[in-house]
Amino acid sequence: MPELVTLITDFGLKDSYVGAMKGVLKTLAPDLEVIDISHEIPSQDVAAAAWVLNGAYPYFPDHTVHVVVVDPGVGTDRKGVAVDTNQGSFIGPDNGVFSGILSTHKGAKIVALENPKLMREKVSSTFHGRDIFAPAAAHLCLGTPLGDFGEGVADPVILEMWEVEEGQNELVGHVVHVDRFGNSLTNLSRDMLVKEGKELSQIRTGDHRFSSIRKTYGDTPSGEAAVLLGSNDMLEIAVTGGDASSRLGIKRGDKVLVRWE
Image 1 (spheres, rainbow, N blue to C red):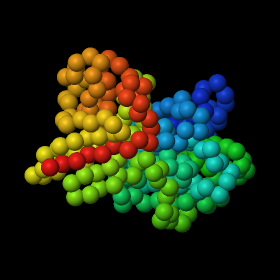
Image 2: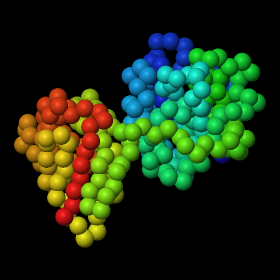
Image 3: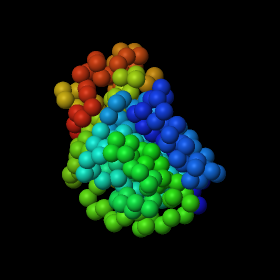
């Protein structure tokens, strides 16, 4: 039974919002351990939340419940969902925050959070993190079956930039995040870049072309651009000692083309 919950929000720490969610979690399940991954997601930036979650969840125990509340559509008809995979469970709005999870875990079970018995008695139209998502996480940890929360969701929202188009000798992904160093990080993993019997011939974004993947930043002279596999095994574009996003004019959402011979 899960006993560990993580939190990702855009709430910051100046207000009571994070504390209120933790209070609900601990009231319903006093033995829970609650870990903060980040509360500094840029305000209402769903894509940034998706990236932060994708970079953190693989390093937690498989029984962890991850709660993500970056929710500009709170109170509208967007669904709240619970997602179950073999690498943890995920709770939050169905607005794209789970794009990376759903792209990796194709067979994930997804249900809508519809059962009022598994919410706080009074549900605010502006704070589902406290009134719906935190209670759902606690009840999931207490052993409530996934199916008790609501009906299955067949068409969850996945951000367009997380989609990968694959052809016989090429694939197209996207820059999904620019980190504080200006590195442009993509949704293309190491596994996607290995084609048996084929040799990588080109990686391109915009007017910038690369013919090989470097091992680390220091393999490229200072000030030069390169592509490499970052610490999370995802392809990234970097400028050694510089800022690839500014220097090369790369932004989140830009396409990245990979070709093989």
